[in-house]
Length: 327
Image 1 (cartoon, helix red, strand yellow):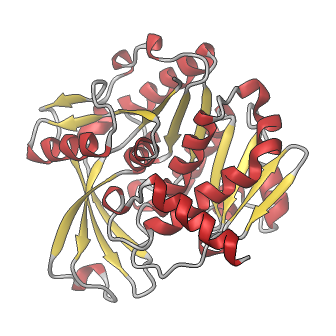
Image 2 (image 1 turned 120 degrees about the vertical axis):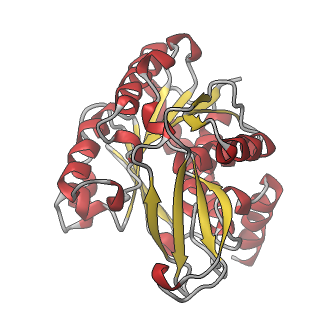
């Protein structure tokens, strides 16, 4: 069976026990496992995919906790390294009444940024696999070089490359550095997921369709444009598909985009995705792919945290079936 490899950060989100106030006003927190690549891997694993995380954790209690939570979610951890050179990354989060978030990160550097390119084994990857990455760990560090090696190796092996920029500006010295890194790596991906909040920042183009079309550079064959509660759109070089999403009562949007990606990549693995035939597969299965991904993201907002709020497959399928019967 084909496998998902997600490379990048894993950290602990300290979630507030009170909402509707700024980060400086929060007085108490509860820990939860987080980090976009880890969330994506956990979602895919929860739906039945074989999923690995490629990262490094500190040799500390926080790292022990995150390994435990990954294994509980079904993510395979044998390629995760540990180090005593730096601690596990931490993020403190505040929540507005509508579920939107504010972050403060602690990693100067954190253990994940010290993962070395020599820690990546090209023999891990095979045809039909998917390698997924984001931008958070593309800052100048050993981990950036590890990304480059993993992408080259996975692509050589015939795997699909998936990229979600997942912009987190507080982790960069300035916006230009973040944008440059995203635009450097974007052409290496076959599939790009981008949100309505990120599109103009990354492209510098205000018109939505023009901005999306500008992303088709290098190896990019498809762009998934997510619009929060309003669903998602799928663009290929020759087609455009829309799914309006699902109406749910959002409690916390943390990890919703990652759950969307995890659901999408899980479905692609089930369909035996081939990078050379990606556009044709998306044309044929776009309804299922967008419905499953949107339902995964929507249900995640109804719980607190990221991995801890991921729904199981039956819940996703039930939401899809219920919405279809109403229509």
